[in-house]
Image 1: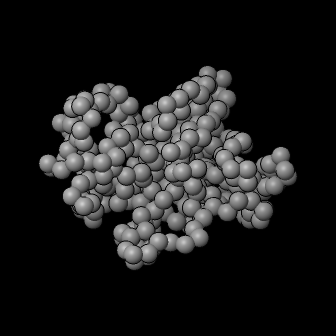
Image 2: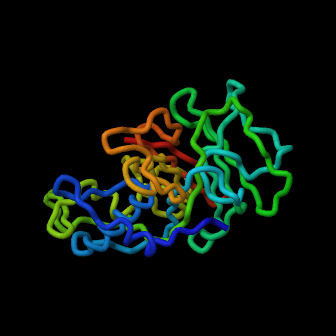
Image 3: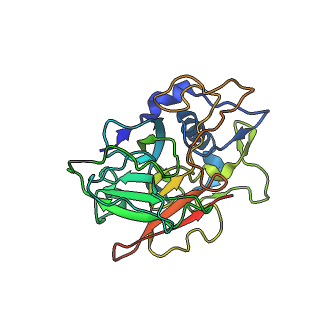
Length: 282
């Protein structure tokens, strides 16, 4: 099972706040990101023809290793047997765990799949994180791996807290003139992040960054999003209450997963259970 995120408990902590007189959609890592987008959705019901909703499970991140090794996570120790050979690159470097997805809470929206957990390994020594290595693992494993090889790419360990919501892949602005949509009378920038969320998620309708991102064999299964916690607000991570730094400063030398320029890895599954993936960024 995954850790859960109670949105209604968090919303009062992060009321909708404008930025220099306008609102803006966010990519999602921190609780404040999801709360911001949810407030905007609720205030922009009349700004879109939303179309049919598609259920998705979005993950807001905690920092560190989870107590439950089988949780959905980014980086760190994978849920796999210690005696299983570690994936390596063509240059014999150990791959890093890019992401681990636990589908046990999500099978009602994705159907039958080959396993309980999907592990995604990769390396960015040549720029893109691809090529990727995928493997399925069942729940109930023992003798789990307890340490990393040491020569893999460094990724800040974090794990997901699941919240069930909807994606609106067929949403269109009511005003098609190109003007900003509005919420509470103010312009909303980056409104493309409101009908569909750019977040680590499970489901059939992720936010695709570029035209052609969905030209992958099969059906969308999950997406790995770049990790970018809000450095200046409380709870940059679900389990870390204090801001990471003052307003006029930025974190240095973090190893948060960054896929190109704030990109994503989109994972598809075909009718034969084979996994296909593509990487995209801005």
